[in-house]
Length: 82
Image (cartoon, rainbow, N blue to C red; front, side, top):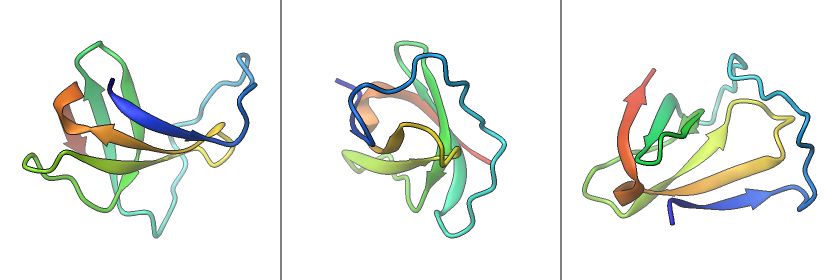
């Protein structure tokens, strides 16, 4: 497992193209999360610490079907601050 995703609806929209260039003031620092399985997520977080089990990531695109995700630190290769 790499995270717990909080979604707006379970159906989603498979044709939706996520925007990663949206500024979202007040959600923390901009980051790119690189998972060990090769997936990358872009968003904002208020805190990342290697010693913690995880952190919340809020997605860059407010129209994304994902509200947020609790990222498990052990599933990441890197978290790049932007």
